Picture 1: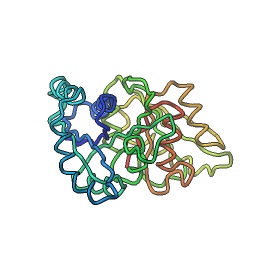
Picture 2 (picture 1 turned 90 degrees about the vertical axis):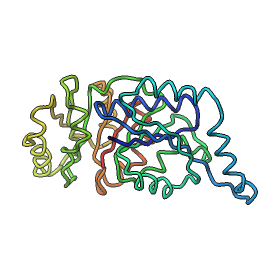
Picture 3 (picture 1 turned 180 degrees about the vertical axis):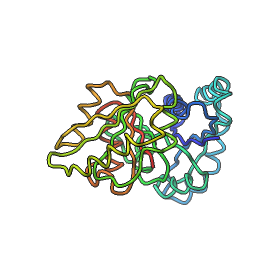
Length: 273
């Protein structure tokens, strides 16, 4: 059973992210936590009222709760449980502790195309999960609903880790309907030994032999520009990258992945730990 965390602001729109999680973990039974972050107030009287506020939220009969019931019935096979968790405090540490304590397998994070308020913990959720230790799927708010059939796995010639054997990636590409391109972007003058190292990771990988895949080499000074061009030209449905400490150095940090790449390309972006 896989555990998914999805942020919610108790609107029906926030529930649209559920289908993306089920698509990534296709064939798995999932336990879903809808994480409602409640910023802690500054005044003591407001702090004392928090338990009553949570009780009110649980009992309220809103379109949101009615939609939850419909989802539970519609996906009774795929979803074993679907619960709203009210978490007080909207700091990265609070979220990280929740992720670790509940052994979460996948996080879904919305990416807003508009300027967000610092108090909007739902749309700023991506900044709270940039350092978590499990995969994160960033979903632009204007992304079209589609199957992830064309997947681009972005590789870096300076990466020294084995990033190709992650079970989540293999699960995504386990059927004949999926096609993955390993996109290797390298700057002019790159050491050919580095390029050969990355290519060998693909061509000599036994687990990839049963997958519909190819390798695309792109020589580009501007790394993110190369990704944008490739996504537009090849109509990619999902971008995937490893997320090791030194991957892409300061050019392609988790924060930039969520705020720039997913927003610009309008394509969901999965970062694998």
